[in-house]
Length: 173
Image (cartoon, rainbow, N blue to C red; front, top):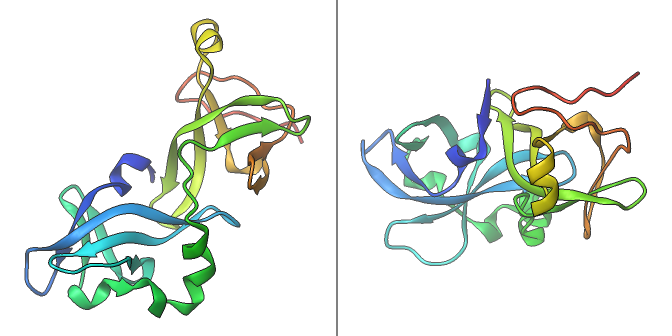
């Protein structure tokens, strides 16, 4: 099932062991190489520093927050050696510029949808400039249309079509 990004930001961290709130998850840790959510930047109640909740520690994401076993699920960033490269990038998907192969800017990422089973980002919802937004419909980019993610933004196939919200863009074979 696809979930919009709002479910992943500024959420309480809930412990199965204590049955209460043990911290706060601020934003997802996104791997720009494959657009997978690898965890969350978080803060344990009463602690300082950069902490991460790895996706492997998350038991469920419910309307009340992100559920983990206990406080040991919130790990110091420097202890997560496998994720260190991704943590150091501090990649933020929302606000990224989106360009075509010919370097034409088509908008900025306003929102995204993630498959809740695989934690892979499937759709990007773009915010276009003011004039284009008045005359056209919202632009939705499917993950198959993405060619590259680099320091300047996200590069997509040239034949990206404008679609109505709720429909998916198609790419001819």
